[in-house]
Length: 283
Image 1 (cartoon, rainbow, N blue to C red):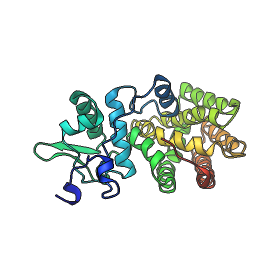
Image 2 (cartoon, one colour):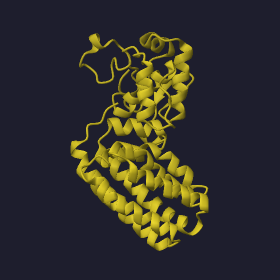
Image 3 (cartoon, rainbow, N blue to C red):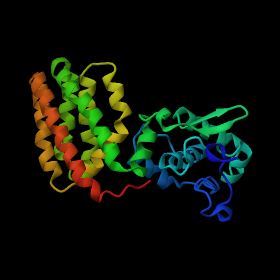
């Protein structure tokens, strides 16, 4: 058997460099400490899948290897018995992990043919875990470009809608998020209110499709904020741009809000371009 139909899973010591896919799943899952699990929850999105459970750790282990390209699309994973042995886990935990990966579009399981890695075009790219794994394992230039393209399509229009439609509570939420950004002592502390500012504007559009879309790309947005907000001088420049968006929305000026958001995103894209050469992704 050769090519994409060849199962993976021979011990690394036997395969060595003979085949890029051989042995890729032979290492046991490293049990995560409670402190490490808490760190994952702090650093990631609240919508990412928890790695505290055993099957969550297995899903993370296999999923990141697929996203990183260690396991190529079309590859058939070892059978259930072999996988459970390789990971030193029960078949129940393994099945739950495979269900998680299948829900994300990464794999599909069929009778007789086994569990196969699906083509990249069939992955659920807006899944919070996939976004987080890609930001940690893939070339950032392409991901950042794609992220800012979708934000430039969505957010200026959302800001204009918010200026027209936001109720008092939504306007207050935008105002508070900006005030918390201003009060943040450093770039790291500004990430959460920055994210809340943009999500509040999407919510204030009062469009039932825009707010969920913003929630889907939350992980990618938070990752980009962590990169750009820590650039020297970035906050000093971005705060007035955020203020302009806020002021236009509060003044109920949709076109001014649209333009202010467009300028804000253009500046953020430039910050990202400057920051990427110095960024070191970690899993």
